Amino acid sequence: MSLNPIKPILVVGASVGGSTAANTLVNAGVPVILLERDLSFVKPCGGALPPVAFDEFDIPKALISRKVRKAMIHSPTERTAEIDVVGLKPGRDEFVAMTTREELDSYLRDRAVENGAELIEGKLVDLARHANGVTATYTPKGSQELVSLEVEAVIGADGAYSTTARLLGLPRLPYCMAIQERIQLPEDKMARWEATADLYLGQQVSPDLYAWAFPKADHVAVGCGAGVGKTQQMRQLLCNLKDRLAQELAGGEVFMREAHALPMHPRDHIAFERVMLVGDAAGLVVGTSGEGIYWAMKSADLAAKTLIETLPDTSEAALRQYERQWWKSYRTMYRFLQWLQKWGYGNEKQMEVFTDMCRNKDVQRLTFESYMYKQMTPVSWPAQMRMTADIVAAQARHYIKV
Ligand SMILES: Cc1cc2nc3c(=O)[nH]c(=O)nc-3n(C[C@H](O)[C@H](O)[C@H](O)COP(=O)(O)OP(=O)(O)OC[C@H]3O[C@@H](n4cnc5c(N)ncnc54)[C@H](O)[C@@H]3O)c2cc1C
Image (cartoon, rainbow, N blue to C red; front, side, top):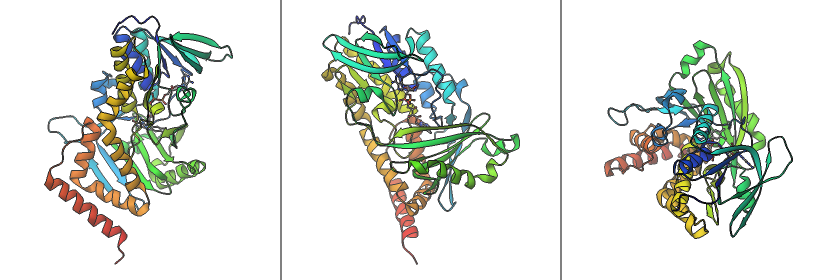
């Protein structure tokens, strides 16, 4: 590539995805404008992240608010499956990292700026693609003034309600609304959450996903999600969850309430003439776990690397390399996790089966290895047979009345 494009690349949204794309680009000498609607915005999020993200994206471990070493799955009837994260790979310190988004996002954004990205606080309102580039129009925060930028290409990292996608004429993705409260607990109550994250299943608490209680250094984040047509029930679902957790949360004080959309389906196309979409704007949250931070950073990094390779060519044909490579690497995983979400959370009986399935050690190893290391580990025949037998037995237990 020519490392001196005449115009900068515009990255829309300076959250985990946008700041990662900006950083990759500036480190390769490509000029970047990073446009963020509101620098004080804190993304509503559980903040759970696999440790591999810290190594891959060179994030300081000091940003880990708490290390979770055990996950508890609670079925609708309060049967539990306990999953130890520790010991999956001998000799490795294994945990799920809990972060707070105010800290993580600020770090990633500041790093991109220190490395050379120009940060503007303003909201993208228009995009016009033409033969020589893209004219992007934004309104600075707190103003109605329209300001234009001439850029070479655009990376849309502007989340589930992506303005970039809308300006391309793309439809809004099906989404689930997720709501979360952050609760400060008395010290003696925090001990319960020392190193355990809890996931709750049930139509009464989270009909389309799971509900969660994730521990942070000084508080617990409690939340749940509801899909299309059920968002009106969200507050009630959260009340139900807090009722279920009444004992554990007794004496706690809510200091933050937050809600946001979570895309439920990836877009068919994520690369276009002079524009690429990454993270939630592209719908790249994975099913079953609702994990999106790692995938936003990963897709942003890949989109940026594609641009570095193809510049000054920003045609659709060139940028489609990003899309092709993404789906070649991850299509099977997305499809499998979408299927698992429908299968496992489809109804309450199925949620009971899902909980039983999570007790199976082979399933635990497979799930956690793929979450922790982002690799689909091959499964031996005996393990496959043990998993199948356990699942069939669980189906029979919950569906066949004796
Ligand atoms: C309640 C909840 C809990 C979650 N928990 C987890 C979890 O525990 N682990 C996990 O991995 N994932 C979780 N997710 C998903 C995760 O939050 C997202 O997948 C991730 O933040 C996506 O990153 P992103 O950079 O693509 O977009 P976002 O983080 O959504 O950032 C988009 C950015 O674009 C900016 N923006 C939007 N429009 C414009 C515009 N017109 N102009 C300029 N800027 C704009 C926004 O202000 C924002 O800063 C959760 C999501 C929710 C809602």
